[in-house]
Length: 458
Image 1 (cartoon, rainbow, N blue to C red):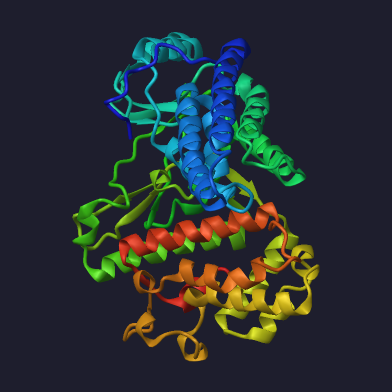
Image 2: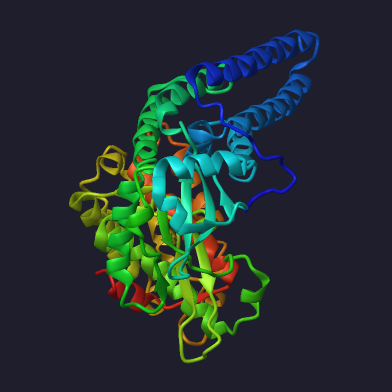
């Protein structure tokens, strides 16, 4: 979604000098503010200083996010990724402020976008009638609707902002420096590991040839399933920095019209949404890692004989998993399906992160996994499931479950153990994907059946 209150930018600060000057200015302001806060707090008691420092941290984190938002490009994407996956090693004030980067993005002016399109398309630009007003903006690209003049076909053009791909390495370095200046984030190996992971994801995400290949793989997998829509890539107008695909309409998951759908239709949408996630993780070993609602639309059908459809829009942030991890994950899901505590403990064996825990902490984690797999368990085998979470047709009621809160409460004792370290990145990606799916189904107020879901992947 674009914000009409923000003035379009004529260009991005994509040169190293431009971006370093912007970051240097932000760093200087942050440094001055931290120094001033430290001096002014010298004569406060401990409690007053704690309250003051927390308020100051929130203020500085918001300032940091606002300044980063002006740069766009990979700096913003880095902030978004850290907001998504950094909750275990960043202060909550920082992650909360960085989350605002998802929405605070100005558009790039049409003349600049038009010049970029001319550069990538050359004479082919004359074959398209492009709407100058974007239908979507993001940190790395802007999306414009267009029409192929000869056929009238409606398409969308995902136009990568000029220069952002070349700024990734310097942006990562600058971002780490900014976090250091805040004095709020310890510069640890964990942070280095995550920056390395983010670097790999960013280089993958700016390569639209790779995204086109991935989109086409998902299209082939799902083309015969009427519950899903994957855009078709139009190679004639695509390149490494420009992606052209068919225009697919729909409404956001949060659209009020979806609440008016019958329970059975919302259930079908929820079943489809959770099933595609399970297929990604357990069957294909290739998962879209960004659970942002903006990556999905719902197409509501007027014909009652046709299923409502989930439109899958973005295949840039893809993470692949090896067979070893998939075997472990399938064992956990199967143990959850039968709600078998001993089988859950056994399935955890062979994963270093879990094997390195003491028996008591592993037992705590097995309980966490049993709660996390509750929606996929057979009701007749799960005496721990509250009766109000299952309807008269043995369907799981996501909106009543408070699943995320219950998982975090159960996990708190294990996470407070001195043995508990930051989970592996793969673990966090899958965990975040499940949280996204949980939110999706809760918003829809959908109810799902465990047996067909688990049968589709085991």
